[in-house]
Image (cartoon, rainbow, N blue to C red):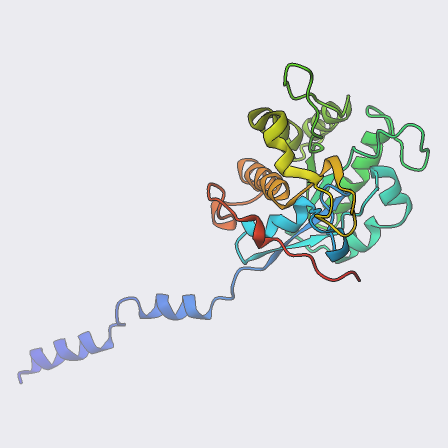
Length: 274
């Protein structure tokens, strides 16, 4: 081998193999941090247990639309309003748990409307907004991202079959608050009202806790509930929430899945009562 050829071979041997450094760097890079979506809300979102089946909160179905990098911590509780959730000290443990980059979903309104109950009632343009701002400021102080959700609509139709809004000024107050304070908004009220209209008075019953006699041990005589969901309804409301989070750029396309797929209702399970 000539001297020049030996020098060429040595020089080539000293060059890194293409892609080796990049591959090693990628292998050594830590996985992206896991993000938790915390839910503060009422019974329409809350975890339900075996004695309440088939009643289902939409928070139980939300993980079906999220990739494994995201987890859901559902702190919604039956019967709570934006006020009573705070007064009972329930927001504190949530804020202690959140980390920078986590998301706090806030949806109240059903029980804020109950004017006869001073422990829960708020006025939409004053005390309701004031209470919601405490969730927003608390999440931001912890480096988390607050998201305001309008209340999911009840099932109510007029005599001509038109789906009716039932939350008065509360959804408008949430929309205004989100706009004024730069908070992402998921307008579940508008999306659910449109969906109930599409389904109609009869078709929408399959989404709500309308139960035949004997269908549930908790309701041996049956039930006609136009507020709470069966699994199919919870799945569709969770889909609305996931789509809204994607549209509002709270989540990225790689964070969500199945948004356009049929999701069988039997994916929902109810753990034993605690």
